[in-house]
Image 1: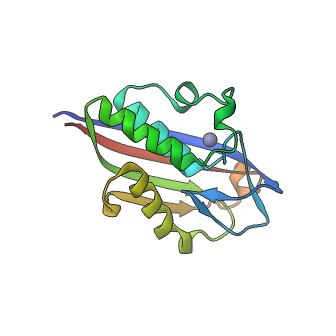
Image 2: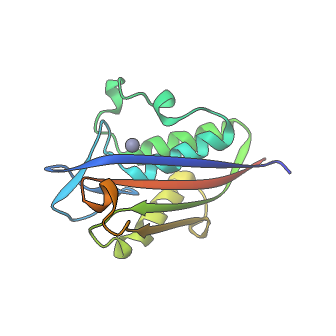
Length: 159
Ligand SMILES: [Zn+2]
């Protein structure tokens, strides 16, 4: 044993005038995600999965949006800090599997770069990070284009 699994979920509103950043990749699109940081749903879900697996709380507790130093920050920096917390707690990161839920735009061309960014921030091999994208076939807030969400699971192992 010594393995622990974690689950993360995040959602943000889409708005004109904001940049769309997913897994640290600036995706060209007419609208982007709105939030205190860069509102990178994929990275936020990944952070929460890791914190959850290690029993270290959640992103809101670790990186509160009341902290001005996190305004507009690249979420990859928060992911790097999270990886350091996980290692300090005595764990190694096994793998990440994540899904982005978005009606538009087509994300497939950007996924390899997202996986590379996440792997680099976590200092793990790229093959240990898997990112998928799906739509919800017009249903709900992702379907009508008012927002995007992401889910992530991870496995960590006591070092
Ligand atoms: Zn978020």
